[in-house]
Structure formats: structure tokens, C-alpha cells
Amino acid sequence: MPQWHTLKNHLHTDLAMLTLAGHIFGCIFWGFIIALILCAITFLIAQGLKGNGVRPVLLIVILPFLLWQTVLGTGAIYARSYASDVEELIESIESHTENIDMKDAAREVQQHFPQIPEKFIEVMASENVKSGISVAKEAASSIRHSLSVYTLKRAGYALIFMAAGVILLVRTAGSGRRNSPGRHGHHKAPPRQRYLDDLD
Image 1 (cartoon, rainbow, N blue to C red):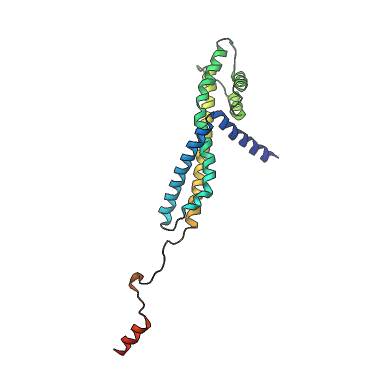
Image 2: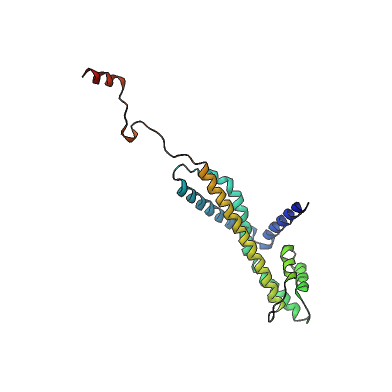
């Protein structure tokens, strides 16, 4: 069941992201605000393409999908502050230990920061320390890079859901025009008036 295992790992990473942020209510609040803004942009794009007849109530369909991505993306932004804590931790270890590599740093981070998703720690352990850069700075850089990639993925998924929303709104939009008597100058005379006209 490789696909289920992959899906499970992604879900675990997403849930861990909220824990990592440590500001769950803030993530939900700002994620909701951003999701509403994206829904408004989606509606305006659809209205610009279709004109009248766009039904904004259909945005309820894509709102939960956008909200999930914006909340997780906000959590990733909050979580970048952990990179500084990771750097301070590894620096304190380096000051007492001469030989430490990225695998050692990853083990220390996993022990002291269990809320950091395991996926990010695995990436950190596989990194090579560049010349002239300390292990602490490399570890912090790895965390920041992983969070940046994660945030970009969330933004990418949000754009996909917005595109799907535009298509949904455009395809389900009505013409926005209703026929009414007298439109375009056409007026049908009542039968009595037509009879009197014939007598004249």
C-alpha cells in the first residue's frame, strides 16, 4: 500500500505543521481571512470572464479546500521561528563537542523538537555542510528551506483550487438576462387596440 503510506505521511506532516506553529488559533484566523480574500479574487476573475450570472454561493464548495491550504501555509510561516531555536541548540552542542555532523544535529533536533515533522528532519540529516558554514547554520538553513518549499506547495495547491473555482463559476453561470415585454422596442398591442386600428 505505497500510495496510502505516502498519503498518511503527508497528512502527518500537515497535522504536525499546526503543532509546530504553536499558534493554532492565529493560523486558523489568518488562514480564514486569506481564504476569503482568495475566494473574492476567484469570484472577480469568474465575473470578468463570464459577466453577469455568476453565483458567488458556489464558492462554498472550494472554501474548505482553500482554507486547509491557507491555514497550513500560515502555520509554515509561523514555524520559521523554530529555525533560530534549532541554530541556538546546535551551536550550544558544537561549543562542547568538536565533531558533529548533520546526522548528529538531526538526532538532537528530533529529541528536543519532537513537534518538527520527521520529513524535515530526514532532509536535514541528508544535507552536506558547505565549506565555511557551521553545522548549526546549515541545520537552520535546512529547516528554513524545507518550510519555504512546503509553503510554496500550499500556495500552488491554493492556485489550483482557485482555477477549479473559476471554472465551476463560469460553467454554472446563467446568462444574467431576462426577457421582458417592451425590451428592444418591441411592444405587442392588445387585441382591442388592434381591432380599432383595423377599422381606421
